[in-house]
Amino acid sequence: MSPTFRMFVAAAFAAALAAGAAAAPAQASHNNATRWFPLEAGNEWRFESASGETHAITCDYEYGPYRYMSGLAPFREVWLAYSGAWPTNLYIWNPDSYTWSRWARFGAYYSPWTWRLDDGGCGLFFARWVGSGLAVSTPAGDFRNCRKVSFALQPAPNVRCAGGHLQSVTFAPGVGPVEIEKNGVTYRLVSATVGGVSYPSAPPPGPIASQAFAAAIASDRARYAHGASTAIARFTLTVRNTSGQPQTLTFRSGQQFDFEILDAQGNVVRAWSDGRYFTMALGSLTFAPGETKTFSGDVALEDRSGRPLDGTYSVRGRLTNSDGSAVHRIEATAQIEVAIR
Image 1 (cartoon, one colour):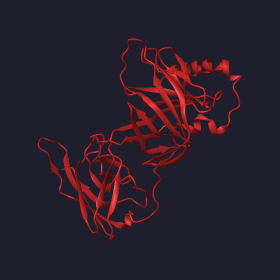
Image 2: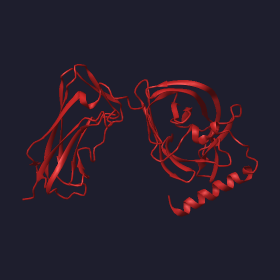
Image 3: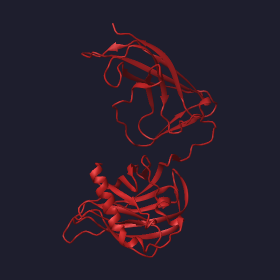
């Protein structure tokens, strides 16, 4: 966002609220928008329907009270903003008319409102509370005292609007959205990162801890692919369940493992996952008692700038399970020598 646009947005926002600021009532902190939808850059909420469809809401950028958001409207990102004058409201920016309108209200149960995404025939929404004090059970946890807000599109006459807009959002205090509805389908929270806190919370050390597994890494002799100028090495990670019980690992995407090449300072200079794309579907992997599984990947022996590697490096092979905290990390390391001849 350019400095000019930043100043313009700030001025427009201040002007839009100036008339009401003096008359703004004192609001209880438990109704504040920052509590019901905590927005910091890097926060994300991931949802899944009963049929496996996924949806994500992310806070991509923050500047003062303004937040650049993905996942709240189809085919585009939007700006939301907090207001010091009206702390129970979240505002959305209309880029067509350069105005703000209330996107969500957390302190007025009986008062419906409208807001505009843009000035087009599919930009007007009617919003209202439809529930308070709700209990919502999701794969990411059980949440109490939730509030649900509905958004009903109000299309202009003779205008046919595409789907994909959120029809309702249920918020949990301190967490944000835990359930959404889109195109008549309900999506429940499967994972979230909010202010550095992860949901579901990491389980306590137990049978899934790394001491239940043994891991080793091996590398094959480097080779050249046909017509390539950079050597490629194949690494293999072997993981064995050393416990007497089945162990199940969960994954937040289609990626289950990675191989990373580190320099003498411990910096990752190349990874098997570089440039690869993985499905966002949740998955799991079960090890029977004593079972061994192997994971192999080819890694180009060059850094991320394309320069050939030369010297001594460490190779770290690891599983990317979502419970891979310090006590659940499953990995192995080895050293390799790379020489340019």
